[in-house]
Length: 435
Ligand SMILES: Cc1cc2nc3c(=O)[nH]c(=O)nc-3n(C[C@H](O)[C@H](O)[C@H](O)COP(=O)(O)OP(=O)(O)OC[C@H]3O[C@@H](n4cnc5c(N)ncnc54)[C@H](O)[C@@H]3O)c2cc1C
Image: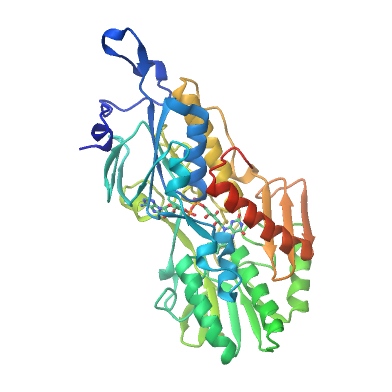
């Protein structure tokens, strides 16, 4: 039985049209003469940055006119930007994640902890581990999975740590504690096809900061497919290459750019050009791919990301949206080793707000008019470097840009800590209207 049917509502007899007015769904309330509207069923898959923002904003905009359900594989909200601090015991896993059900429920959004296993957009049904759900509007915000298969030797059973999952960051912390008793060369980097370069830069600068604190002098190498320092997967920023170069020189980090990796064996990263990087401790960021359910449902590209319009509607189904990392973005450059585009928190939230506004329009019988191309979303990022950092602001995520600014200094580290506190507070309380 469909969850909608369980809840006593009729499952849609036929697919809701893209801009079907809510008035069309008006139904009679027996002999009272009162006519009440059937709330539009909005189903959101994923409850992190993009899913949480989309669900709470749909509810905020539509109130009783929307019956919003979030189905998420994780029962927690996880603040991934703080994963970089876990290995150095600056944060515990419990400080960067919280159970998210209460946040949703306190705003009238139903939360189901379960994994979606199949999306049937033609019949407007989603199968999950917790039953099948019908919907009028679907928001896919299922984010990323780590593609450890990119080279042999990566992943939880591999030979290097990856902090791109909470478990991975916790494992990297155990490894770092052991490393401090038996130090040696450190290698930090990203494989070809990776996109989350900010985390790799932050990690290597946190490594050198903590090595200095522990008075340990060992060789540190940063290895990346990026064509130059400070590319970040966003094509670089004015002055960024020289600023990052200066950071590398000051912190005695050996830079290896434009590199592809062949494999990681115990104690050694083997590069595509035949050279090797020995290590005692290594952290490598893998590429991301889309959620399994996107692939198995035939909705995504070969990497499992979903092509979208600037309204964040999918190309084929006007009542199905994809936001956050789940949405496909193409890199406007060609490099010898693939360099992905990072879909960071700010654009993930922006896409979700656009989708929520458009769903609200559709429910009201209007055209979904809000548009925001990914490349046009402003870049707002802070790169942490232990007790230092760089604030990066630009009018557009991707070049060409009219305005871009990089502000180095210890205030950037403090700003990142303050932002973490603010964001977790805002999210825990579900204050979806706040920036
Ligand atoms: C180490 C690291 C550091 C980062 N640092 C920064 C930073 O400093 N600044 C910044 O802006 N961004 C940063 N990011 C990026 C930021 O984390 C992402 O932009 C953000 O996580 C994207 O949110 P999302 O909701 O699209 O995807 P995700 O965060 O991946 O969330 C997806 C959600 O969907 C759920 N899900 C997956 N599959 C299913 C399924 N089949 N059914 C139901 N639910 C499912 C997952 O459990 C999860 O809750 C960082 C990322 C990492 C990994």
